[in-house]
Image (cartoon, rainbow, N blue to C red; front, side, top):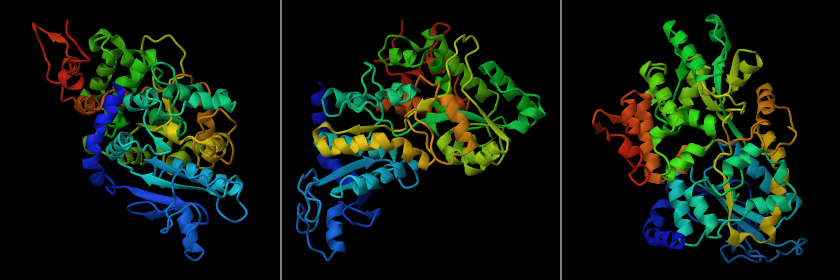
Amino acid sequence: MRRRRLVSLGMAAVMLMGAISGCGAKTQTNGGGAQAGSEQSGAAQSGAGQAGAAQGGAAQPGTDQAGSAQPGSQQSVSGGNEEKPKRHVKIYTQLTEANASYWVWDDALKAYQAEMNPNFTWEVETIPDHDQYLNKLKLYIAGGELPDLFQIPNGTLSAELAGDGKMVNVEEELKRMNMYDKFNAGCLDFLKFDDGSLYLYPDGRYCELFWYWKDTFDKYNLEVPATWDDFLNCCKVLKENGETPISLAGSQSWLNLRFISFIPWVSGGGEFINRFKKGEIKYEEDQSAVDGVNLMYELASNKYFIKGFENLAFADCVNAFASKQAAIVYTGFNNVTDSMKEAYANGEIGYFQVPYPNSYTGNTVSIPVHTGKAWGISQGAYDPELQRFFEYFVNHHTEYAYAHQLFSPLDEEMTGDLPVVMQDIYKDLVGVEQGWISWDDKFDPATIVTSGELAIELSQALIKLWECMGLRTGGGLLLRSRSRLFPPCLFTFS
């Protein structure tokens, strides 16, 4: 069945590949003496070919007359490096130069080339837009042209690829390197499939927190909320005193889904959402899921969000908090502005983890930790040289991550002169064992879209609670929104 599904995509590949390639795409090549980071449109020119042009235009061994590399070639170039295999790696990513993680990989690639194999070259194809990126990845898969290294979320597509033997078993590789136990348990938990297998590698360790202005809290004698009742009380007091409680990017469906899924996640990790997507439980049968919807509706109906949040982009939402237009914001550390880091160092801003459900009695560290869009490695391309590079990257990941002020997914000592806020957060992150569960990764594409739309409507209090969950009212059923969010195949009525 899996193979038939993948092969069926091939019909679309012929028609759509031309339209998608070049649509927001950027390809960069490097290596063999080429100038770093040159940008091209259309087909990539290899690093070895660029090197030839830089040295007078002569084609190098292992290239065609135009200087384009033959991917996967194990030939050696002439000179003093005959013993080093020639290897050209294709990398497909959503990362751009604006992402710190882009430079983590860039540092590692250049260092490996300089220290380990001067004949190691690469090209990076970037498509920042999420939907366009996934569409082209599916076409690569259907055409049997899976890139050597590629980003892919932990969801249906990656599970199918792994099941078809098209991805490297990352757990086996990390254990072979004696590195598996050095990785943060929460990061690995986030990436594991439902059966516990690990075929994905973390892009980094990303954490999300609530940030607040301390003087605003102090002004109204508010304490950092430990439970959602505490949180709602803080919002109530702030609103009654003319303050804006929360800066929210209402246009971002994933962020709205976060608020709905906080309580189920803290209560049971991925238990609810995994059972729900398999049709083993109805939404209204899980109290934590119902409480999550109640939470968002209460925040929305009491107008605790910043004015105009419905059209606010995520960066604007964070900037609004940074300029003190709201008392609280929820964001990942990688989105924290320099002014916020400075304010934290000066004791003006603090952070707190996701509040506990009111009846919760556990002691879980409730900081959502995820790994960004994970990395897959093509099994068919995993020759000894790519394996050596991957091992090099794993062993140097911590060094390069902290060089760009990113948390490493490994529980290794922090390096470099890092902001105080990073040092403080890290102390909390070490205790995280339960990875975040992104609902937008777990649903099928159609449900992701409709659930996101519904979450946005709920954040604006445009729909009622029973419309969100399909609860029985009187003698009938209100299906308007529930049937959109949860297709009949996932949700049945009794």
